[in-house]
Structure formats: C-alpha cells, structure tokens
Image (cartoon, rainbow, N blue to C red; front, side):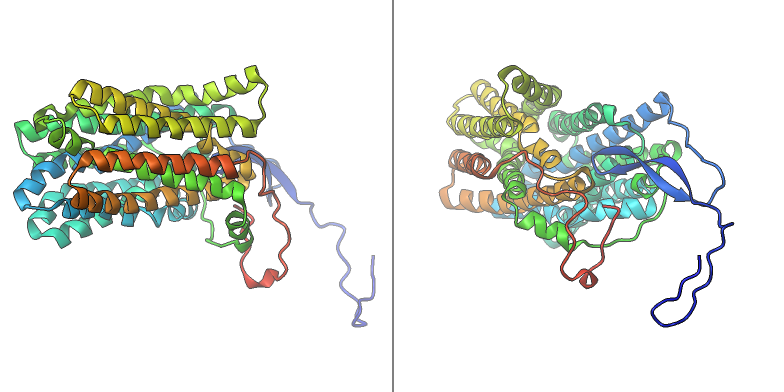
Length: 477
C-alpha cells in the first residue's frame, strides 16, 4: 500500500514478493547456562543443529575440569616452594607476601575480559592460549627468581593474566555444550577439578622439594600444562550456538545501565562483599598454611603434605552443599532469601570460629582437624551467597554480575597478602595473623545478613536509558 510521508514524497511500494524472514532454533549461552532462542536467518528452510553426543560432551567437561585442576595447582604450588625459596634468597615475610600477591594483580582485570575474548575468538582458542601462557610463566619461575625479585614479580603478574582468563572462558565454552538440566553437574565437576588441583599441589610439592628441589616443582607443573594444551588443541572444539558458545565473533560493548544497577543495589553488593571477605580469609589460609605448620607447629618441609586434607574435604563437600540448601528449603518451608542468609551466615561464622581455634592449636593433629573444619564450613556458601548471583540477576546478566564478584575475590587476594605479611612483620606471630582472619569472615556474614536477598533486582530487558545515545547497548549480555 502506498502512502505519502511527512516530506511530501511518495515512498517506494513494498513488494509483496519479499520473502519472509525464516527463524530457526539454536542453542545460545549465558555465562551460567543455556537457553533455546530464535535467531533470524536468510536460509529458505529451518536448520536445527544436532545435539552434541554424550561422549563428546563428557570429554569437553573432563578437559575443562582438568584445565581447572592445573590452573589451581599452578597457582598454589608456590605456597610450598616459597619456604625454601625465601631461605635461598633471604627474603623477608614482606617479600614473600609481595611475591604471593603479584599473581592477583594480573588475575584481577581478566575476569570480564575472558568472557569477551571467548565470544570474539571462541573458547577453544582462548583457553588453549591462556593455558600455554600461564604454563610458560610457571616453567620460567626459577629463572625469574634467579634474576631477582623484580623479574619474579613480573613473571607472577604475567602468569596471573593467563590464569585469570581460564574460569570465565571455561564457563562460556561449556555453555554451548550442556543443557540446562546438566548445569549443576557440570559446575560441580569444574569446582571439583579446582579443589583437587589444590589438593594435589599441596600433597606432592613437599615431596618434590624434599627429594629434588623447589625448582623441579615449577618445571614439572609447567610441563604438564603444555601437555594438556597439546591434547586440548587436538580434541576440543567449540560447541554450536553462535557467539555465546564461542563459535562466532561478537563485538565488545558496555552497557552503563547494567553496571549502574549493580552498584546501586544492596542485593548485588551483598554477595560481592561476601566474596571479598571470604577470599580475604581463604587466600590468607591457603598461601600461609604450609608456613604456619612449619614455623608454629614445627613440621619439616617434607611432611607438609598433610596440608592437602582441607582441600580434599572441600572437593568432596562441594557437591553436597547445593543439594543441602534445597533440602533445607523444602523441608523447613523457608523462603529462598532466608535459606541464602542462613547458609551464608553459617558458612562464614563457622569459618570464623574454627580459624580462631586453629590459631591456638598446639599439635599437627588438632591443627589439621580445626583448619579442615574451617574450610568445610566455608563450602556451605555454595548454597548461600555463591548461588545468589543466579537469584538477583536475570540469566542474561548473571554472568556479568558474577564476573564482578570474581573481581572482588581477586582484589581480596591482593589485600590479604599485603595485610597478612605486614601484620606478621609487626606482631611476629602467625597465630595472631590467622586469628585476625576470623574478624573478616564475620564481617562478610554481617554484610549478607543486612543486605542479602534472593529477589531478582536486575531484570531483562533493562529499563530504557534517559540518554541512550551516550553509550553502546549490548543486547547479547
């Protein structure tokens, strides 16, 4: 039908023969899962990608879990190696804390970058390249240490850049492979891989140091990363589903409305503050635990493998915490917000109590039991503030909010290493340092008790902006 527009000109008549847009179904992903959506295509007939086979899907999950295993093993091995390193290079505790904290300066900015690079270049390339990158700087750590403290700090920083890409890339990569009902199982596999990597490093590194040298720790772990990288590049492939799954490129953009919503919402601040407090305490325990057992309990380096036990327990309990929170909710008839607050407060308060008791332990048996209970309680956070990101934000935005929370956790690593080393230099007692971590855990519990909520506050679509031309809107978030 022809009409005259406001300028007085007659527009072209639309041809009736214009072919209609054909829609096809495809799998696309957010950072935490998958959904079936429609996408326009110019093809004359629907094209439905075949579902991945169970064998292929399980292989991708296994390779990603193994990547997490190596990722955590490579970052934690220095907590054992730094004991003989500090003796060889005559480092102070402040120097040791600076070395341990340098990793987090590189790790911090890469959380959101990892997801964006995955959308642009595909998860296979990004994860493979990042693993080779961090493995290389693991391998050259002894050389960097011989060159001096500045060179070692640079190597640790660059290693952090590579490791920071891993987790967001893995989540993005697997989103195109798994159906919604498999999300919990997949994330449990990834979490188990991470905890087992920490367990393995703390178990074998003392033996390697005692039988060979601390240098061999980095040579062996770095070489393992290159071996994994070769297998990954040969066997891995991006799942179907467009940019969200890593199969197509996507432009980087920045939605001011989303970040404004996050920073003005107490419900969003609650889990992020908890992650900071949780990370502050946990990184302090993780990196100084072998040192505590050597200096305060009197364990020689070759017997420090006992420190693996808390992380093994965490790996075993990770799959239980989420189920337990749902069980409590259904049996007690509590609201979701009440359950999240209950599990968050019990997790962090329990960790606070047992880290204080641990700081007073006088023998290795009581010490390992108490620190294991501390970290075991902390696992309950999986059913608390760790799950809140799914509650407060629409699935399209939960990934970005979670990435911000991970950034707070990385920031806590920087602050924790600086604080713990400085406090030790002041009080000359690791017992007092560890006891003070209890106050930080309690602060996290209080923050969630006051601000925590399981109500969605970031909806899709976001509200229209007052000045939409001032920024780029990324509808793919």
